Image 1 (cartoon, rainbow, N blue to C red):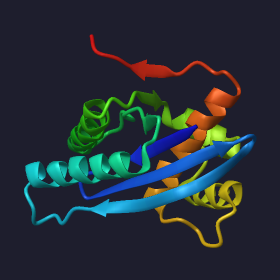
Image 2 (cartoon, rainbow, N blue to C red):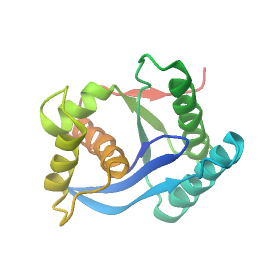
Image 3 (cartoon, one colour):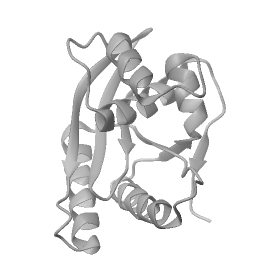
Image 4 (cartoon, helix red, strand yellow):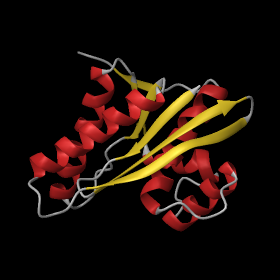
Length: 166
């Protein structure tokens, strides 16, 4: 199975593609889509959409995996993350790729065994699980972590929330 994990943000969106071979996960590619703050929000969202659509077209993942929106104190940040998530969902949906989402604590639990893991712990475990030589950037690590979470979920037949048209 090939999974595209996405860590959405309007300035930095992490994206990582993993293949699953038996019990091993193999990194296909990962990147950070950087959108300069001097651009309008609409331009940044368009850039995210286009780059993710290009990644999907080139690498042909079977599913796109995202974290649910975490409800924190900063409403404006949550709205922007939601808009970046929508760009990712649109890119996948337009190309016929299903979208699944996971709670942040579930992603952390799947990767580290601790639902309250720190970003540093997540980076180190992603590096270890994928056999990387260097730590991935925080955005890449988060994207790869949500892909790992989906692969774990499929491997262990855990229920996922597949987003569908309503």
